Length: 93
Image 1 (tube, rainbow, N blue to C red):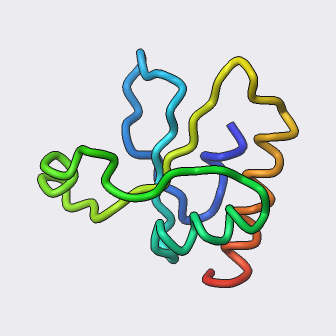
Image 2 (tube, rainbow, N blue to C red; image 1 turned 120 degrees about the vertical axis):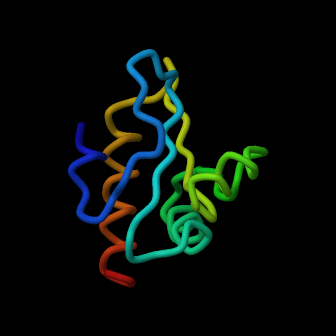
Image 3 (spheres, rainbow, N blue to C red; image 1 turned 135 degrees about the horizontal axis):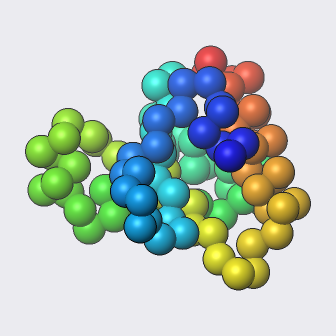
């Protein structure tokens, strides 16, 4: 998967029966900054603790970026997300 190949990216939640929601962090940028940059690139994601603050506190995760993948998601959508993360890396990495 191209997303997991991004430098400094760590997927949060990798269960075998995971649904099509990808939560991740980048080791060089805050999730809110990532979300702002992706928004400017036309990529819609959510950032924050996603109503899971107790478990995120337990694992010392302040916030994540969450991308939802569905039947409507195209390869071009994923490419746009990856390109947006490249822009984040240019600015913060």
